[in-house]
Structure formats: structure tokens, C-alpha cells
Length: 200
Image 1 (cartoon, rainbow, N blue to C red):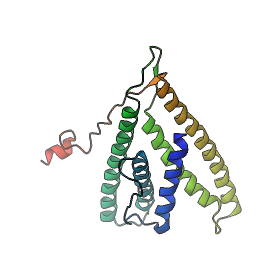
Image 2 (spheres, rainbow, N blue to C red):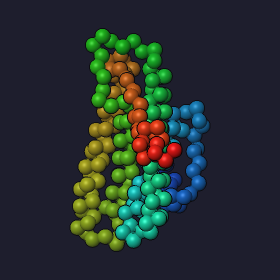
Image 3 (tube, rainbow, N blue to C red):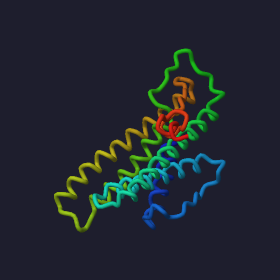
């Protein structure tokens, strides 16, 4: 199943990142560029780094200049994340381009790649909630609360994985069809953001 492949790659990315646990560490993609695994690994690495950016920027004692620099990094990371989702959807569009779509076919509320994006974030939530549920310096009450949350996340992983695999099966059979809308984000575009346009 595709969700199993994706989760194994996401977990590999998360575990590799945490060997150094440093947002400034070098990135090395172990998969060749022609493979979907390359995009999935890159996608989760972006999510993992941004997860830790978001932790850092919430430090109440962070230097304002450092916070502004980090905010710019988060903005750039969000754009990279969106671009990767669109690349992954392009992979599925190409893969299923010859499928005969049935007259009764329906469209899903989100594309496969945006569902996979949610799975990547969910893998991160599970990793960090598991850490909290097993933290040696935490109270028993804290661990119990985190274990309860972890159980919910694990159930969500099961449901989301099944939904992704079912969606791909339905697309492959022609029962569902893909339509991808580019995000068309405006705030990073110098022609569309009036603040940036005014500085040109």
C-alpha cells in the first residue's frame, strides 16, 4: 500500500533528523531523484525542520531580530512545502493519466498529495507525542495524558492511511478523478502582495 511506503519514508526522515536534532544540519536525500521516494523524503524533511522552527520561535526570550529571520525561514519553508505537494500530485497525475474515468466518477475533497501532506505531519505528531509519553523526567499524570493523545493519533494514522489507499484505488479504477488546483499563494509574490509591490 502507498501509505505504508510513505510512512516508512517519513519515519526514516524523522529519525535521521533527530540523530543531530539541528535545524541547520545538512540535508542528504538517500533516494534517487527519479523516484517518488525522493519527493516523499524531501517533503517530510521540510515538515520536520519547520516543526522545530515553530518550537524555536515560540521561545518567549527569543531576540526580536532572530525571530524575524526565523519567520522568513518559516515563510520560505511553507512555500517549499506547497511546491513539494504539487510535485507529488504531478507524479500521480502522470501515473494515472491513461485511466479511463467512468461517467459516474466523483472528485475527492482533496488531492492525494494533500492527504499525504497530512500523513507526514501526523507522523511527526506521533513521534513527538511518543517522546512525551515516555519522558523519564515527566510526571505520571503527564505521561498518561500524552499516552491518551498518542492513542488517538495512532487511530488517526490508521484511518488516514486507509483513506489515502482507498482514494488511490478509486482513482486507478476510474471511480474517482483527480483535479489539482495550484495554491496560487499571494503573499510571496511581488506582483500580488501590495506591500512587496510598493517596494519595487
